[in-house]
Length: 129
Image (tube, rainbow, N blue to C red; front, side, top):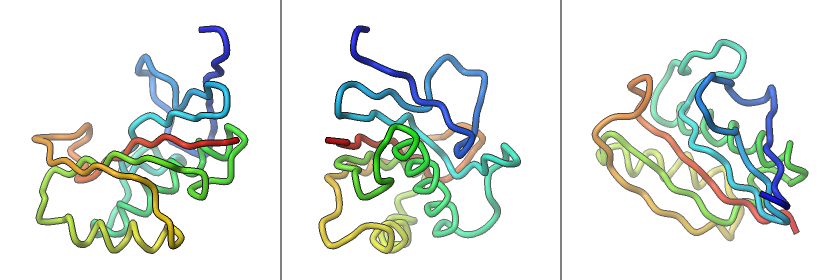
């Protein structure tokens, strides 16, 4: 990979799995999937689905900032993974509160299970140009 840089930051949870927290490719940052894991403890955050959504978005923002971007303001695409679509409206409300009047493109899917049995995970693409 010629024009790519792996992104690593203490602002997101680290793990020993074989992937980067994010990868910058030119003016684009691809952020790996994050659940609501606190980077200080390495454990999922306590609280409702709104608190978990906020932690996920904090993790994404930290990677984008480490890549040279302006956090969530530079995010252009998000994929949301939920273990229960009954959480959809509550996740939407927490998500909406974190983005300006022009939110990124998005996909939301229900999945059978997520690592550490968390209820929400997201990955993202950010444009840093």
